[in-house]
Length: 217
Image 1 (cartoon, one colour):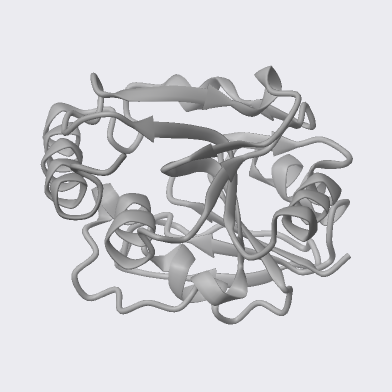
Image 2 (tube, rainbow, N blue to C red):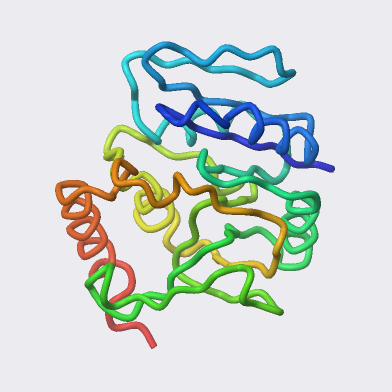
C-alpha cells in the first residue's frame, strides 16, 4: 500500500501507543510529530520527530514532505484507525484522482465558519461527497503537500493549507466506517475549543472565504 501517515501530538500521550500501533497495521510508513513537553518514549518502528518549543500543528505539513507514500494521511491524535481505513483512502484516491480526502468535511455557504457551513461525516455516506474543507484525518495526493508555512497560524493550519494554499484542490469526504473518535476529541483543552482560538479561526475563514469562495455558483 503506497500510503504514509503523519500523527501530531502535544499532550495526549496516554493512549498514543495504541493509536500508533493501529496506524502501523495500515502502513509501515508512520511518522509521529511529538510536540509534548517531556517527549514521548516508544520502541515502536515509527519515524519520530521531536520539536521543542512546540511549533503547533503546522509541523505535520512540514513532516509530510519527508514521507514516501503517493498518498499521505495527516491525522489528529484523538482518532483511532480500524483495519481498512488506509485501504479506503487509497481506493477512493485512485478513483477520484489527485485530491484531498477526509472523514469529516464542510460545505461552505457563507462567511461564518460555525453558522454558514454544512457538515458531512464519513460514516453517514454511501458515496464520496465533494466539499470545500476536510479534517480530523485527511489524506492527500503529494501534489497538494508543498507550501510556505511562514504565514500559517497554529489555530488555522488546516484552513491555511486547504483554503489559502490549495483552495482549488478537489476535496471529498469518503464513505468509511473504519475509524473511531476518542473521548479526547471533545475535551475542553482541544485546539480551537477555546474562545481566542475560535475567534482566530472564524476571522481567517471569513477572509479566505470572501477571497476564494464568495459569489461562486
